Every structure is written in C-alpha cells, then in structure tokens.
Length: 164
Image 1 (cartoon, rainbow, N blue to C red):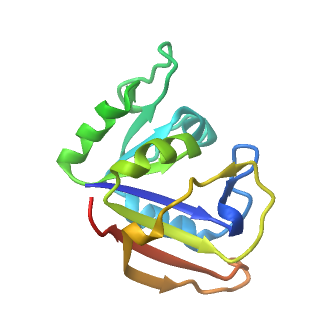
Image 2: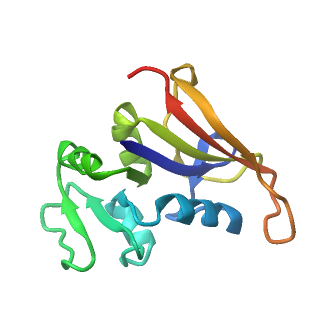
C-alpha cells in the first residue's frame, strides 16, 4: 500500500523556505505515530530539511534526479526513478512524506491519505498539489486539541481512494 502524509494550511500551503510555517507538536506526534517502523519516501530537499539525517526507526528512501547524490548504507536508500519507489510498497505501507514535487508525482499511485488540515492562512512558497476529493472517502476524522502549544484549529483526516 502507498500512503501520503502531510499537513497544510488554508490555500494548500505546506512550506516556506524549506520548513513548515507553523509549529504544531500534536501534528508532529501524528506524523511520528503514522510513519514509525514504516518505509518513508521523500525528495532530496525534504531530506535536507531534516538536517540530512535519517528519521529513526524507519527505512528512509530519498528520491532525487541528482545522479551524484549518495547516502551511507545506515542513512537510507537513494532512488532516481519513481517506479523503483513504488516497489517498496510490496513490503507494507510506503509513506510518502514530501516534498511538493514528490507529492505531485506520487498522488496518482496512492491508496491512502493522512492529512492534517490547519484552519489558518500562512505565508508560503510551497503548496500541496490539487486533489480530486471526489476520488476519496473519509475513513477517520480526529479533531485536534487546541492549547498553548498547539494554537491553531486543526483536524486529522484519513482517506482511502474510492476506486483506483
């Protein structure tokens, strides 16, 4: 199964200058809970946004067009072809974690979406691609809890594709 996980503000903003333009610890916990012990797929820029360090307790795959990009064996796997990435979904859930170009390329291949909708407008330079929501059905919706550390109104929604 191939899944995609992301958070976005209004207007589908997902990033600004290589980082998320918000701080929402409960979203980070949701991300961790849903990616732990799974294979994660990301682009090179997303890899670099993590300080070029693998996320622990996950198999890290970096998809890049840069033929000279390498990782050590303990850091993860480098792929240059999106079709090679889909093969990793045969061993469980492959989680696509960004960035925008990877989301756009993988969206037609995805079976499940994990989205944190943040009901706030943010300045951004990176956007999630358009989704045809008619192709998706909600299987779970969890309201976010707003507090001093999580100051935005938000919700977690998990979708499955209706027909592929």
